[in-house]
Length: 442
Image (tube, rainbow, N blue to C red; front, side):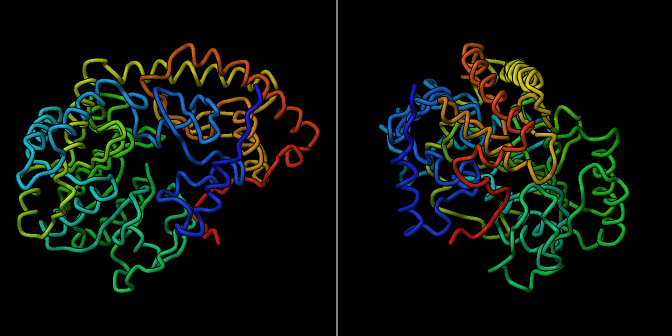
């Protein structure tokens, strides 16, 4: 089957005249996948199938909506609940009761937590959590590890050193527009480096409002590592915040910290919690969360009904389907199948991270990495599959989809293998290499 990609790339080129940066989300920029050729927009999405503006019928082997649609696109059970809420009114002068139900549900899943607040996104949830921590402690500095969004509190670390964030998932995040008065308020440390985090607490502990980190992203914590940070937070009176926006629900029922047995003071959620509908959640201990009443934290659309309804329906289905076990199974099957095919053509690859939350890495020379990964995306796209380095399976991804992808992967890795052997990878690309971090587009 021949695939033609014209309308999407054309609309995106037009969009950049009206939308600074082209899209609302860096991770959806076509330049991050296949510059000038990525279809960019969709008409319809269902399960793991996507129809673009040229009516190409594509199977999504990437991240299911940047990790949001953990059940798959347009899940029937979630959509049914949301459609009913739309008909009954998604907004009113009064509050919707579903926000209370969702708060209770999240605290039931996480017995250490007593209270919840809600936003519309994960980044907002982290910013609210930081505000609460600062209010509860009367301190300003934040120690952090990993990626936690676009807000000032986080980007402020690059005021001290423009390279502070380069090793925290996304390079190139300049602090332009962030008040210079925030310099020194965000202190980074690296995951699994116990010596470094102890040094951060020793130097700044009495000034820290919070320590913010993911329990895990692509690597399990070393034995005792999370426990050590919990111990340090207790010692210095620092609020421990776990960012569960990406990892939650994939490896276990609830936040990943439950699997490791280390409880924070606050945990934040987003993405998969509501299967593509806008919702961010902050849960925490009453002793910390109650400080939110002493700070103005308020927004009209945080009360909109659809996110709460979607969240309840999604969490009920996650629990009913024992989702984490399925994602581990289907993720492992996809990874092992692709790895075996790649190796058969002499293409050295490996997957980093957990089966339900991973990233494909090409073990080639540094100057070839971006070229090879872009070629992988290009060749998969021309055969009807959306594919990139990150891979987050969802409930809708089935054995039949992996079976369909297998012969495609065989052709794609055969092409890559031949290109590596002949040193002609760049000549096989029909566009330039994809971007790997933030950059100004025009």
